[in-house]
Image (cartoon, rainbow, N blue to C red):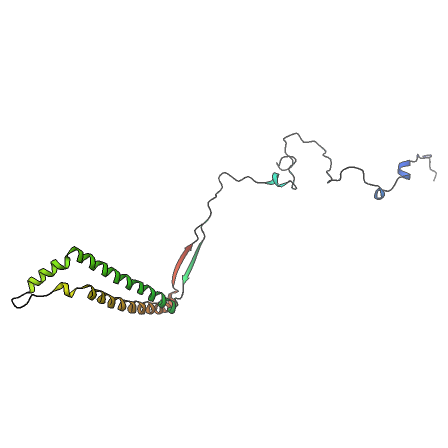
Length: 199
């Protein structure tokens, strides 16, 4: 076969130039490669899927910051927890009830003393005592003396005895109630409580 095309021109740059892998990079600032746009987009237009042109995934935080909606709910939710008291420790119940009953007994003694002094200052004992003495008196005696019977030491002793009895009974009843609650909680599951966190 004979080649009829004749001598072909030789390109100096192509024949003597370096290969693509051996070429030195072009001078200038290095940066990410941006492919050329086939069709320039008009200013203010959209680019693919209704997004504005120039909005890329790698945009800075200033561009990707989302603005809060005006109707968004800003009130924090109140968390609630539903718990169940399945057992009451009788020892702890006894200690707490003992201290509370002692405080209640002291308050009872102090209140009785204050009440007696107020009534004595108002003259209640003298008036009522005189009426009772006249009603129960006779020619041989003066009758019943209310003021001597309801003196302050007697009132305080009587109130103290009642307070001690109250301490013993309240402590025993509270401890017994703890045992009864534990037995009943084993059958019905105990008392359920709903706790809410206040924010």
